[in-house]
Length: 246
Ligand code: ADP
Ligand code: MG
Image (cartoon, rainbow, N blue to C red; front, side):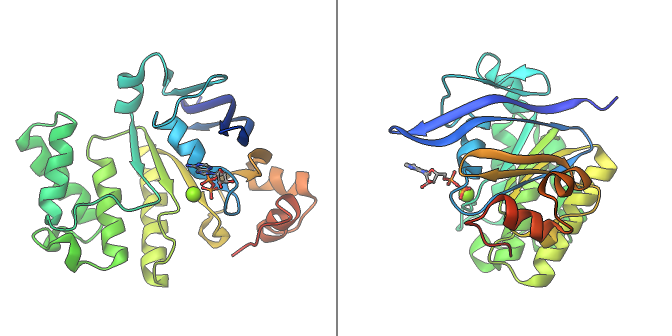
C-alpha cells in the first residue's frame, strides 16, 4: 500500500472573519502527483501557508508523513520541500550560493551538499550555470533552481504553488516533465497548485477547489464522473463557475 505523504483533515481558515477555506479534506500518497486546481482566490496559497505552518489553524489537522504539523512541526517540515508562488531566491547570489545556504539551513554537511547540489542541478541541465547570479537567469531557469533547492534535503512531499505561471512554453514543458519524472523515479509525493490544466498527466490526481471548498477530488476519471464532464477543462468550468480554465 502507498504511504500517506500529506493528510489534510477538515481544515477551515478565515482572514479577519472572511472564510478562505471551508472544511477542506484530502490526502496525497507517496508516488502521487496531485493537482490542486482552482481559479484565482480559490484558497490554494492559503492552504500552502497552513501546510508550511506560516499560518495557524484552529480546527482540523494537517499531517506530513504521519507527523502532525502543529504538534511535531520540526519533524513534519523536515519531510517537506516547497516552491512558493512568489520567487524567494537571492538575486545577487549565484546559483551555488543560494543552494549552499539552503543546505546549511537544513543541516546538510558541505560535502553532502556539494554532491546533492550537483545531482539536482544536473538533472535540470543547470549545473553548468552554477556560478551565474540569479539576476542573470531568465524566469524558467530561476524556477528550475528553486525546484532543485526544494529537493536538496530529499523531502517526501513537494509543494509547488503555480511554479510555471508566466513562463515560456518550453520552460513550462520542461518543468512539468521533470516533476512528473521525479514522482515516478523517487516515489515523491507532489501537491501542485495550478489553474493550467494542460500541465496535468493522465495518472495525476485532482483536488478542485472553489471558493475555499473542495468541489471534487480523486482520479481524473472520478472527477469527470462527479462533474458529468468529458474533459478536465469542462469539469473545471462546471465545478468552478466563475473560474476561467487556461
Ligand atoms: P489562490 O492562491 O487560490 O489564488 P488565495 O489563498 O491567495 O487564493 O486567496 C484566497 C482568498 O483569501 C481570496 O479571497 C483572497 O482575497 C483572500 N486572501 C488571501 N490572502 C489574504 C490576506 N493576507 N489577507 C486577507 N485576505 C486574503
Ligand atoms: Mg495563489
